[in-house]
Length: 111
Image 1 (cartoon, rainbow, N blue to C red):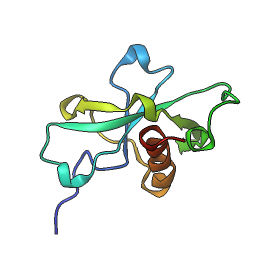
Image 2 (cartoon, rainbow, N blue to C red):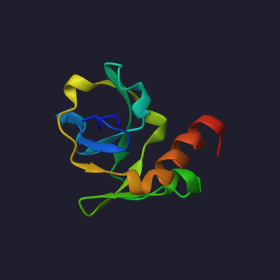
Image 3 (cartoon, helix red, strand yellow):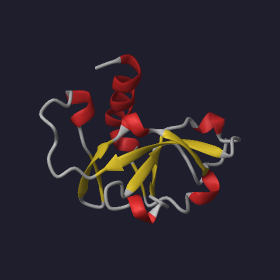
Image 4 (tube, rainbow, N blue to C red):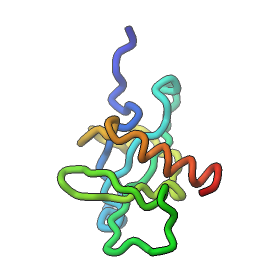
């Protein structure tokens, strides 16, 4: 059995960039655990949105909940992040993985 990574898929981390934390307080690891040997993780920011634009497609307007706050997956802003800057996970969104996958799929495959 393989030990669980400290940067596992669907783990949530506080945004290390303080200047961006107001709008994007967290990010979630989307990268498969099978690629744990890389020094980076493919992550998706989670955004605070006061009002969801009416034109936003359903697959991009679903929310996830972290610490009682509803956040929007910002799949279009996903990018690699060095795991050395990530800190410790604050939550897991494994139970809400379908919402995250749908958002990413909408960006890659179209809405």
